[in-house]
Amino acid sequence: MKKKRIALVRSILITLAAFVALPAAYAGIEISGGNFHEVIAGELYRSAQPRGEDIDRYVHTYGIKSVLNLRGTNPDKSWYRDEIAAASRNGLAHADLALKADRPLDDQTVASLLALFAKLPKPLLIHCEGGADRTGLATALYLASVKHATEWSAELQLSILYGHIGLPMTHGWAMSTTFERLEPRLGYPNS
Image (tube, rainbow, N blue to C red; front, side):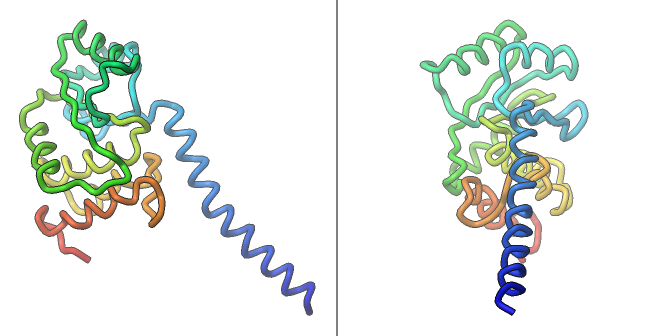
């Protein structure tokens, strides 16, 4: 009887580990590949931190006209200088907004983000470091506030499909809770 109980516990633990490990592995593969996705053809795209040559390709292939960096201004970092140089050589509008994936957005930051959606020329590329949490929230808010998309399609932007793991005590949980808090203002029932 004791061996059966141990075998059952072992099976449960292996199943739980697979439940966590498989989505995490998928998210890692997605993020390491640039996590670039078309959200609305000709209007909105999302990605992880693009290299300069990625931006060049996105401009050529998708007609990107502006870049919204959710990592904030970082002139001392090579990735930022590369991004600014690529935006400049391609004649792109560029905006920085510093979000932290582990902190909920306050109302002022949400208002700033929504104002950037209105101001920046389209097609727009939104990115953060991994393209999962901050970018997921921003694209969800774009779909909800600008396109008046269904709650389901907006929330899908904050999902494992893009590397976001919306579970308590995970790095990006604050992005999920921010969206939930904003649902009534976006016209969704807060469930």
